[in-house]
Figure 1: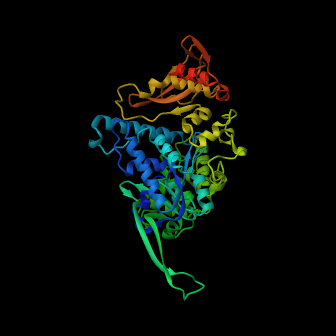
Figure 2: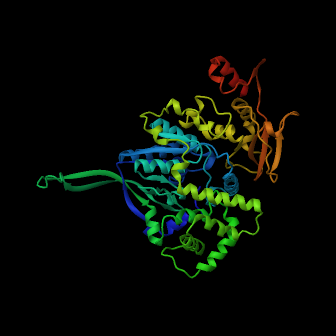
Figure 3: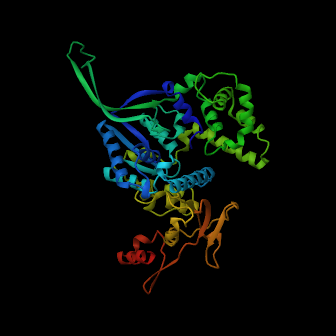
Length: 501
């Protein structure tokens, strides 16, 4: 999710909230999405011409080689598709709009004239190739990955590497290593050698001392206990504070009157941290809450511009967010430890199919869930199609007055939609977005896949009818289901692919 303003609060107080840590001889759970973003920015890989993927791949390899030199065992966890409950959809739409704006500025003024950055769209795929080539243990989980990461880190008693500010809130036994924030990098990738003279045996103190050497990298590590000690409060206030600061579930725009009220109350009360008035007031207010339900009721008293239905939705969102920080073990959607502990990246047969089966009546057939988890398929795209029946595209650095580059592959995607499942989707309630329904006379939105593309600089929804028939030369071929693809001959598959292209 990410907590609004929390990373800034920690960075402004890094001298007291972060401590130097020698990273070596340990497992390390890595938030893969955050890592492949951070590596591109940290190594300042040029973004022109669609991305310098060879340079980026080499930098990824350098990063993992550095960990290996320190005897750090990386375990990479990435998320699959988007939650079908739509709780984060508005946040996703806002991020894509911000990306379109940044891409337009870079295209108009050039990368040198602006400080904007846009991650090239094939960085995730490049990152996956590196993981496979180096045989780094990795897994894709169904949806949000942060809770699964937190659960696994506590089981293994090892730190987490991420740039997700939610990890400042979770009770991680061995702490959290942030990668970077703004212009501050919290990891020094320079290898260092530690030499320590110590007694060879505590049971035989008369024995000669020995030198213990190890290679490490210097990082800044965070532990939640430092924050609660600094503000002299119990841990229980942190989930409330994080939720009401605003995240992907709770829109802080609905809380303006609440912020005004508590800022008046605590404007003259000092906090033992550098913090803006709103954040400091939230800390003080959250520490005074005895029951979580009392906090929710108090917040809703200040929300006068929402209908009763909207208030109910806001109450449910606040409740869900608080629980997601508090009960992380109960929110895990798969046993990541079982996956990694199998001495191979093959998941047990008993666990196959659960990736999508528990959220849809039309699960992807075996072996596709396993292929999704192992990065052998474009996981987020296929899963979003199969479960959510809609996809949203990342804008590239391109002239926004021209058509979107995704237009040229629209037919190919329609064949992929036909392959996946006979979709039934209810009509969207979003009427503020321009639509262009690409269906035949008998088609309806209910039988289409909703694509969020762009028209100039604005978001545009396009409804694509799944293709049911492909032509190759004079041959007509029905689009098979994924279930039947393994039974096709090599020649049939080739002809189907040639017809699609």
